[in-house]
Length: 509
Ligand code: NAD
Ligand code: ADE
Image 1 (cartoon, rainbow, N blue to C red):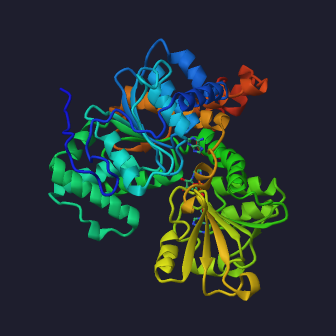
Image 2 (image 1 turned 180 degrees about the vertical axis):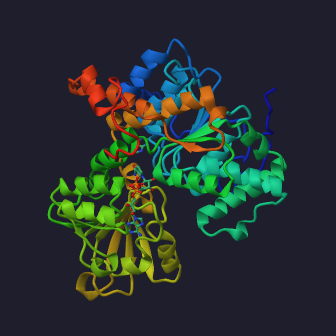
Image 3 (image 1 turned 90 degrees about the vertical axis):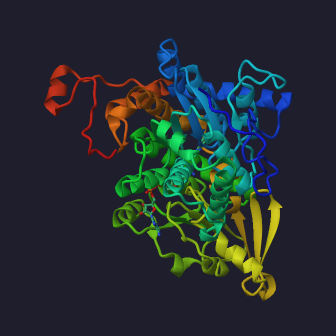
């Protein structure tokens, strides 16, 4: 039987939004023009997402996701709209929030809420709780509303926030404890603890346990979210199976690299209009995202160097003629800084104090702690720094006690997207084609979990290489590729099946 939550609860912090409500959706702009714009872009994107359109053709009739109730926490963009509508096309019921306060494209959110067959007056789409420029309190309110779905049985996560909220909530209930915001180690953590505390006060101590018990599995989109899952698995605290979408080759070696190659400079240019040619740019971290970011900046003829901790990645950089340097040694010499590590405290407030006047600082990794934004806020409170908004997601931070600014006075730096994912905060993220590969993997992962979740036990698993090759194959037609077909003799000579997989598991591409 469907459980109903009460709707007469108090608002959450300063959001003005009832903590618990039966709101069908919440987006900012429910107008015909915005819906039409969103729908047009969704139609255009679908044509650029051959993997998703092929899955619709292959599986539409069979409805493999019938009975799946998927809660998604992933950037609410046009590309995500195509993913959502593919999941529903295959039979799923879906609810959605963004996984970042700045990444929502409002016309995408509106069009998804309205749906292909609805109108703005009679929306018939998917419940979406997302808008561009959420506060942290609003963000966590949205996430709570999306997970408070009694029938939810699958999660599609990007960065692990939905998974984390459910686990933390269930753990507190089991321990008989109420969250204490005084225990928080960051502003965002404080908001999460406030949320859990208010849920306990207003809804009791058996909210998250039944929800977690019903979740059959999660598919995780990104490197940072996979780290969180693997940590939980090692600690023995993971409560449902997880499919690691990130480490499908057709995800991390395409989205993380070629996606960032497109969307990094797109974001810097939309935000600043600064010419990158000839400028010195430092990319911190030379993994998949760092490699794409370097290509993006080098294509503009910027002079790019990197930092790394891993000797293999450092050697790869050397083979590409890229200097490997230490931040502390070079911080005063560079014009543009991009963090891409998935680690924290990569650019500290002390570093920013030493930068050139008007240096551009941004992050393309998942969370906002690669750049020490909290350290900067503390300097503002101490009266040493002023934050000036140039436009949303672009801020000048003016130091008062430095001497490398104009006329020997204080210098400024320009921080993009408040230290959060720059490509989704200041631009529109990766383009449709590369997201098609990622989201074809996501759809296959959801189909696999819906069909077989219990057979995985508590584990973090990647999809098979056979499916990885399928995802690639679905994208080849776009390029008029004529793939060579192995003869039977050739296949047995190199020890593979004629139809693949063509590489052993350990192959690295
Ligand atoms: P990765 O593990 O391939 O690369 C991270 C690199 O950073 C590694 O090579 C590691 O050695 C290096 N590193 C770690 N600590 C460092 C330090 N202190 N100094 C210098 N280098 C350091 O991971 P990835 O797939 O490249 O992902 C990086 C981040 O980007 C993650 O947070 C991921 O979730 C996120 N991501 C963002 C997007 C986007 O669209 N913005 C897309 C995919 C992934
Ligand atoms: N991650 C990077 N780019 C994205 C996009 N366009 N949509 C959703 N997630 C993304």
